[in-house]
Length: 113
Image 1: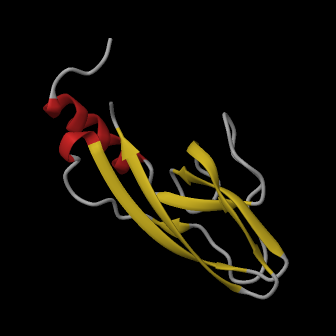
Image 2 (image 1 turned 180 degrees about the horizontal axis):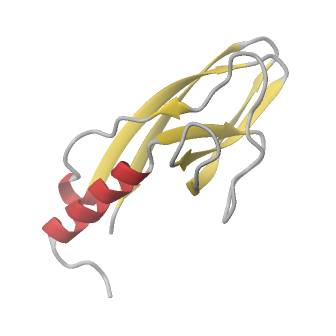
Image 3 (image 1 turned 90 degrees about the horizontal axis):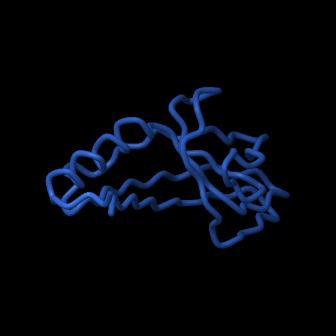
C-alpha cells in the first residue's frame, strides 16, 4: 500500500532521519549490505543533522569527510552509530579518486513516496 497522506510521508521521512545518524564513505558500491568503508588518515564517519520537517516526505542532510590519499570513493551510506552500529541504506556516488588527501562533501536526500 502506498502512503496516501502528506502527514504519513512526513512522519516516515522524519523517522528515517532520526535513525540514520551517521554517514560513511565506501570504496565499493553498497547494496543490501554496506560497502568497504574508507579507512586511514583522518577519515571518520560523520554525524548527520537532517533538515527539520520532512515536508512532502523529503529530508536532507550533508556531511564533509577527510579522505586519505590513494582512495577512490565509490559509494556512501548511513548507519546508526559512529562505529559499528547498524547499516541502514547506501548507494553509488559519482566515483572520485584522491591522489592526495582531500575532502569529500556528501549531500543526502531521502524521499518517502
